Length: 366
Image: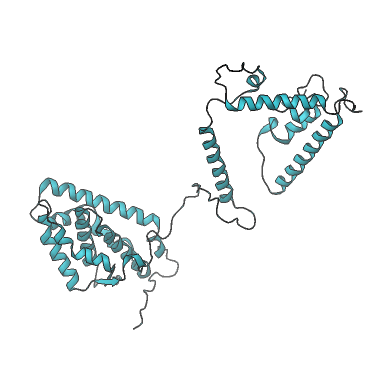
């Protein structure tokens, strides 16, 4: 016997919801919250009033919270098929053995009410489902639900639960599928589609294979997010404030004396001392015909080489449409000014040019 899927009933040009809306996180998460609210409301009123007819209390809540209008949410046959199946499945998932007894009972009441209140005989007709898919192990635990309501405060629920289950089984409502571990339901998991807002940045998986072609804007945002996370972790593991140039130039503490200086201070102090020693020793015998302070040709060539490479990189970025921010005190412009300071008696970069960026070279146009 062939099964014909419901056809769209919307006319041309009519805007209708697509079936995957009801399997997406937008609908599934919201509906799960609504079921939780219904369960909590019923539990609160049941424990307060102790009604003689528990199902009548549920029907009153069902109507007062607007659940009776749920069937009129969508009218297109194809979309309605997905809507009905997802709603019934979300009620079923609150009836699993691991849920609390009140949750299982209220979910059963909701499934029973929703299924048997499907509009029938309407004009135009509304699509309805005749069976509810359920896993084999889930059905077995559902049949044992009345016996699990043996506590004193749960015993009044037993007659209603037994009667509802007998009606569902007598009408052969359930369509039994294999065990839940086999994932026989379609879709296998809910939600199937995860909605991600455009402003949301997902974490980058370092083990993921690199995509071909240019990175998208979202990929760039992921990399930036990963870099910020790594920086945050590094800052959390680095005690105290970062060292400044003034602290680096201070004389080191006496050997054996207690110190609270930043771990990077000693590294920067050693770097500054070694750099000064190198600048004083490189090409001390050679003189530049361009610079008045007889700066070594090696330092001059190194500065020009670094500046040339940075300008080439800047050109590549401009071709890709990347805007490099930072103003006049950052980037290639500052390096170029630092290189031009090489040999200027009044400039901070008089001896090293770009090598004196740490000391403040390139910050002014003097």
